[in-house]
Image 1: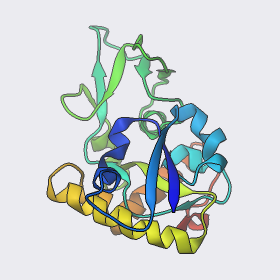
Image 2: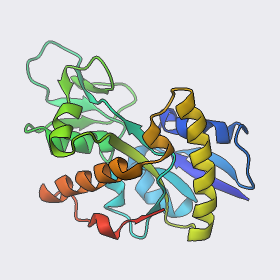
Image 3: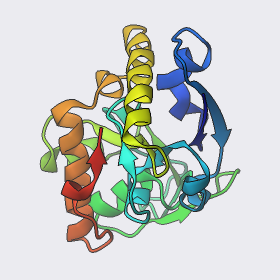
Image 4: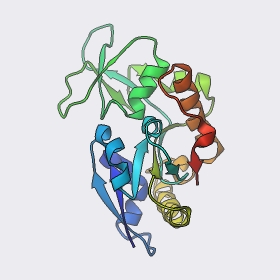
Length: 220
């Protein structure tokens, strides 16, 4: 069986590289298809699986997500590109990216997203050596929680097929965790990973940016 998985950034594929390269084998072949972040919500029904930024779950019905193969980080912030004391814009993969939504949820000032192949904003998203820490603010709301940026999900596959791919994603992410390439939460979100997703939507609903109940999300 062949299944297509949508993604928008090569970094997202890190948890499943062993599966894509045959290091992990099963009866299912995964074929990656690259799609821009802001186009993804219009393509989900055409794809078997996708790396889904959390905000897109708010816009699409009947998405099932798996707890393995997610893109999860421990650190996140903004790095300035100039000497201006204020940050007014940030270069992002898309206006529906989790990173941009975290800016909206955690920072008091309004920061304009710049979606372009060439960055023309005055800051970028960074995972180290940043000037403004988002992870420290995040942990005021969700202590000891990581930041879940993308989860693998589907609006097409049935539960039986998802259970099969879940095993493959977990095994693949396990290889990557052992190599130090991804965090333990990519292998399995666990309680802290689930709590991070719940907290994200609680904050998003509180700010009236989202309108979704975490309890209604099907998680495998």
